[in-house]
Length: 116
Image (tube, one colour):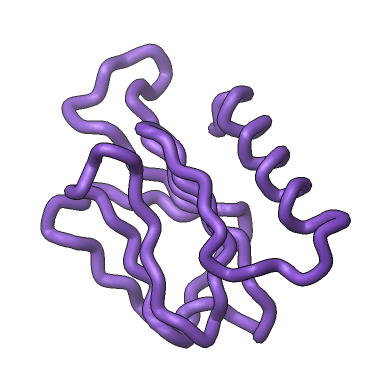
């Protein structure tokens, strides 16, 4: 489940870049220690990462996203689940319903990727 502050940041990012600014420019990203958001083109390869963390990277190869328009993709770290500390953070990816057209191979450091 998304934390309220993460949901708010995702909504604000999407509103800022989807509404009132014309076409979406692929590659526009917001990054923090726990949240990374971006618009990515299905025709380009790209990556999404957290600030200060080179060990968790979501590589999106060319053709992985459906359609022709830039797609919103985000990932966030979930440090606790149901009030219980986990051994390592869980990496969640979204938005809900996100489907990749090709298999993504996690980097060796990425332990668990949860796609909504």
